[in-house]
Image 1 (tube, rainbow, N blue to C red):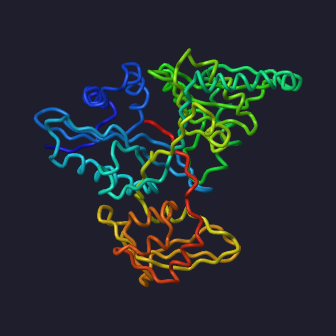
Image 2 (image 1 turned 135 degrees about the vertical axis):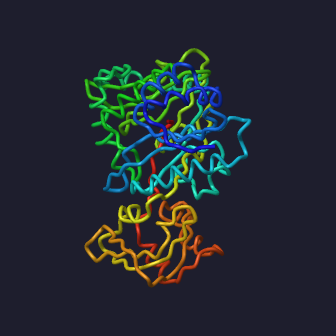
Length: 401
């Protein structure tokens, strides 16, 4: 048995395993993935009996953490042939991948788990819950049409010319600027969306019988969303200007087929407020993305604190997988500063396992609740200091691969 990182020219050797394990993926999607994504990604494999039996892939992303931007990698394609499972291959691949992230000083890595129980032993914790909405199209859109008919005369008098179309590769720069201006400022954690990101996304959605849909009013871009079509029409991550939700609905109705179910993934809070009580609409919030801190000092350095606060505290961290994260860390800021200075020290006011610290810093569990865990030690002063730090609880991560 051998674990190794493949050379780029060898990445295609893993396609047979992808197709064998991820049978739900279409041929066109797998073609896209192995032609586009594997050109720049990292693949670790286990070879046994003369062939690849297990793999883990990491796709590179630029990640925004508050005001800082870092390289990060999204773990995907974790797969082992059925006959070679229960041999510890996945554990060895994960540890190799995490150690590489630590060496690269990437603050954290993330993934969309097949099951939480698979990754929680490696200190991955959920950081993002995706808002989802399912529309019984015939009922919902009939109600919306009736409402629009009643309002048509007054609306038409002030309505601007509206056009929707699929994005082309040449639109990517404009879409990136739209996201950067209108959506990125809302989030503490999200992937950086440049023109290359959207060019890749256009190709990805096309491989899923869909595209990236643009909504214009008087030549101004007012909305963008991704869509794919299999058994239903799936809308992903609508980024729509305020008060333009009706324009979004019209764009969706143009795409949908008769009696076709529509599912919106990553819908906005405003959409939920407007439509969740309408007949034919079902809403839920689904845990989607888990993360794992991989280089603690880099991660802590990205945290922010209100300028009117002063922070000075230290605590020990225990990381059973990444020993360089373990140690005693001091975080300090003065009045008028919004960034933390991070250094190693000897005096500790408490102890946190890395998984508890992940939940604390992402704001998924309150510090006082974490402090009650039997494996956590924290003085009242430390708890008060950590409460001052801005938590990374505004997360927007809808990436699929």
